[in-house]
Image: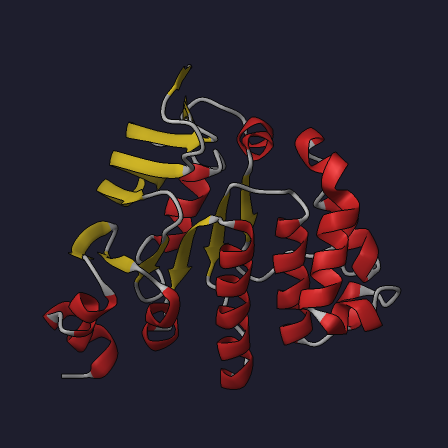
Length: 250
């Protein structure tokens, strides 16, 4: 089901979503929104449901209740019931937790796998050139096997692969996992650069609070599968008691 809305809008709305794995409830009554051009952080420690939210958006986990609607180029699409392939084909790209690259393929082969969406094929050269300009290490190692690269280089490759899809909405799941602090900072900066350059709408699930709020317009805190707090700005998040308990030890 789809309907025309204001042209050019690229947004995401989740309303009252319940989801789980068998008899295990992972999400309960989760509602959040990402407006056109925003970067929204979904904050929470491990095991609280961040990745499940991402999987629900991509159709990898089917919610038992609620709505998920993505507006792409001004057209609203109900995502529940769509296949993952159909959702990605709309222009929603995921940078998964742990990167999930093809280790025995080269850097360039991994990038090209991101360009399978029909609407992305016309922009392959432009997107590839941008990836190599933004991530110069990828250009230097375009024929290197992905599995032989460092964690930071692999994260850059995962971001580049998502960009090759020519996305409208970018989902980034735990970009800091397994990276040294300096590489976390560079990765977060790269997400902001991609967002600004391509005018993307970004939902980023992250447990590194201090890094996430550097680039987030606002955010949500998820605790035990519930949205425990919605912050209207980075300042709101910084001053919230739940944040202080989870991240600042006060």
